[in-house]
Image (cartoon, rainbow, N blue to C red; front, side):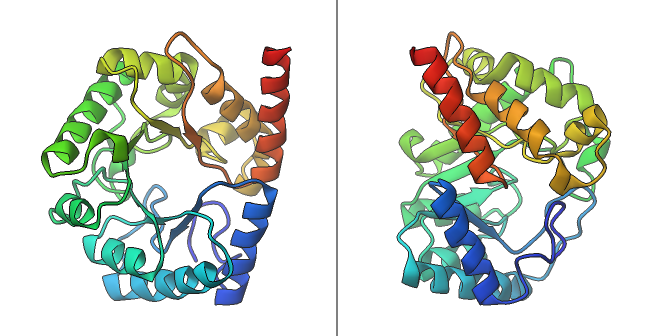
Length: 263
């Protein structure tokens, strides 16, 4: 209900949420990300019981009508376990498995893919922690450590997706530098040219700073430009997954990019 972009729009009922997920799948989404706890800057933690109440019924209902892969966006191992049991396929943890000490071992036992995101602090505090000596290098090395922790816990690299955390403990310039140098530079600094990377710039605040658009839902044009940068192929490749709100628009833009590059 308090998501930064479309909070309160798709959670009025289970049917509303499932309808939106099916529309996104129709528009070209290959994964549907379902979350019950907002992680926008300044957001407060909610009770695990409330998070479960928000996500499990939606996952159960969506799984009845679609085989689309579902990721559960949560920092809590108990929620992750319940969501996978309900039909989700992937665990997406914005803390990279650092918030809940049971998360990595839980995901390891579940034997499912995990998205490990870079951030500092918590959603309440992260925007006070945006200072880096070199944001691309620092984020890459932090992701390498998160990946190693996950491997040590029994989550093999082929089940790991690494997310640089656009908008999470990053200031305006940090977000732009990550997009400018892209996945290739992150892989270079990690020393791993096979790392699976995810970029999520959709409707984020830095796009509003650039364009002057204060309403998150009206930042789709800026989102499309940022996503095109994320998938532009550099020396060590593009990102593997992009997370967006407006699937149809971004998909069309990338289809055109691919056609031009392949001509």
